[in-house]
Image (cartoon, rainbow, N blue to C red; front, side, top):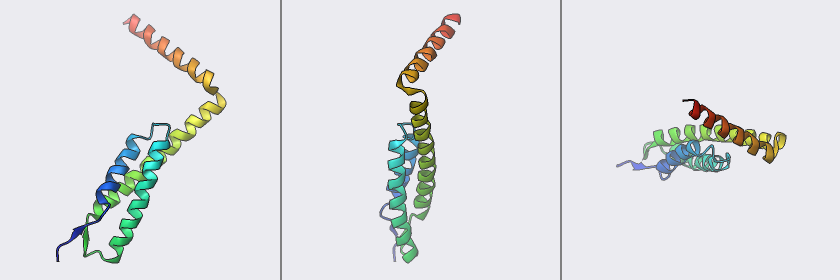
Length: 112
């Protein structure tokens, strides 16, 4: 009998990769994509566990799951840091920090 692909193997892998790539978008997009990848991976892993001889593509599910976990951790860290900065420094402080950073970069370019 021919083995068939797990239904969400490619989707889990793509979502896991995207969760890492988008973790710096305020942390929310990466978090959503990572959680979605974990939910799909759990469904496919249960399907594979029922009859492993019938399906192929388990390595994609496992890799996507690991990438999703990494993406969730990075997104959570970034989100917590962003919230902390807004609570402690405030929006005006963040703008001042950005302006000072831009001025320092301009000064360094002028010195070169």
